[in-house]
Amino acid sequence: PGEDLAGIHILYVGAAQSQRLEQVVAALRGSATLVVSDTPEGLERGATINFVTAERVQFEISLDSAQRGGLRLSPRLLSVAVRVKKSGLALDRMYA
Image 1 (tube, helix red, strand yellow):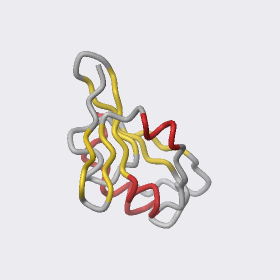
Image 2 (cartoon, rainbow, N blue to C red):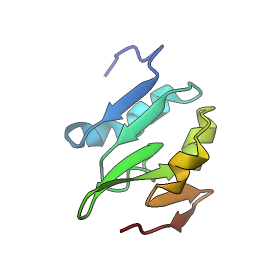
Image 3 (cartoon, one colour):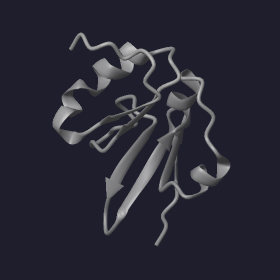
């Protein structure tokens, strides 16, 4: 709390700090900071990229969060995401 987040390009919010995810996202609103998490419902809570673990580590992406931060994501990155969330809808892709 109270930390200056100006100038940060990528911020990882781990499971130990997951209760602060919404607060961090609100503090970064309007800045071009990529917020990465590994928490349940990370995308719904404001992260742009959220790591998930099933049999291996994969990730999901929120296009809305990226757009709000003015971030552009590579189509190649999107093509390997297990889930791409856009405008409240999720496009699920399962990769083996």
